[in-house]
Length: 104
Image (cartoon, rainbow, N blue to C red; front, top):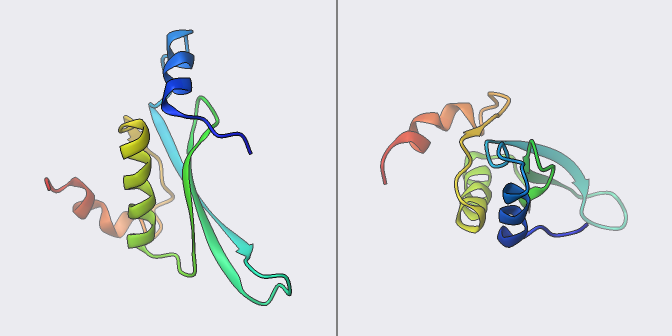
């Protein structure tokens, strides 16, 4: 998969995609992490709705808030904060909304 860096995002924004970085959405996907298919992991990716690029991803054993937040933090450090994040109100996002809104 092709990697998109911040410079490329900035160039695309300059060419007219002013809505990029306005909405990211997370996607959890089950994956096989070994050759025999016996061990399953979970991949989380944060995708930009306009540019259709992956801001970041992580592979974990469990779908828990700390994993979702750690990948989101890495994405924000790399590309800046999007205007909005659209989740599915799953427990790894919705139950931790207060934690995300509190000043650090």
